Image 1 (cartoon, helix red, strand yellow):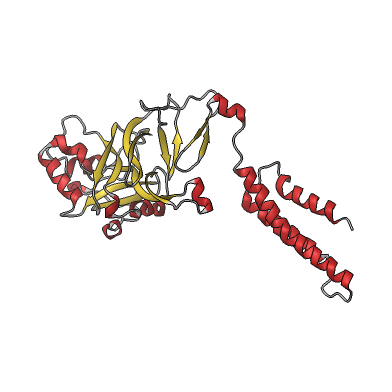
Image 2: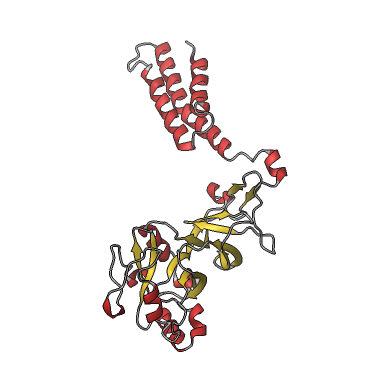
Length: 331
């Protein structure tokens, strides 16, 4: 019986059958399938000691195959990057999570004055950007809840009309009502809850236009928001270190409505204030800034080259398809 050769062939097919592109779950699934094949060759009933020994041996081999494949696959996934990439400076590692990024050849990632990478947030993933990447640079405090550090995030303007990127920091509950546009896959501020921190900021901005950059206004497009997330350092995967509560940036561009809602709900008052990254249309020439709290943003949110919904008579905004974020969910 050629069991050793068969076992070697099965392990080799599980790990290297697809040119090294198999993920760990796929390798384990393949190993389990091969284990079933091995077990199918064993006799269900034995009437001699030699038959029973052969059956036991086959059973142990079938159990060992998934463990061997999983261990080898995990070692392959966690292997260090090739020395040539490390020496060339194209591989970067996030010290908090152990996540590695590889810059394409000829790309020079942007760094701030402290030598930290600048990122473009896509969902919960911060992606390094090239120095030539166009967009507004903003500084956001992220990291462990008790020890946040300022990091640079880059946002390219998404509206087809003149706009500005700004950050507004508010305590929970925010008191902001959002509407999701299915066509453009973005969330827009449509109202503020009376008496909340956001509403108080808006009222102050309506009296002093210089304070508008510190307030959330109807018509603002949500580009990103900070959320509390559990970060698992590499050592935490083995139980050597507990997962940590970190403040992270969630990039809302072209994300699902459920994803945006989930990010807005991630966090508690004890985690500190929430930072919103907003894109705001600039006021047209001759528009009065005294109504910055309501009228101007509402008008700017009307029909335009960026395709947003139009206005109806009286300055009220026409309702479009999409959900309205209930203020109770911001708790």
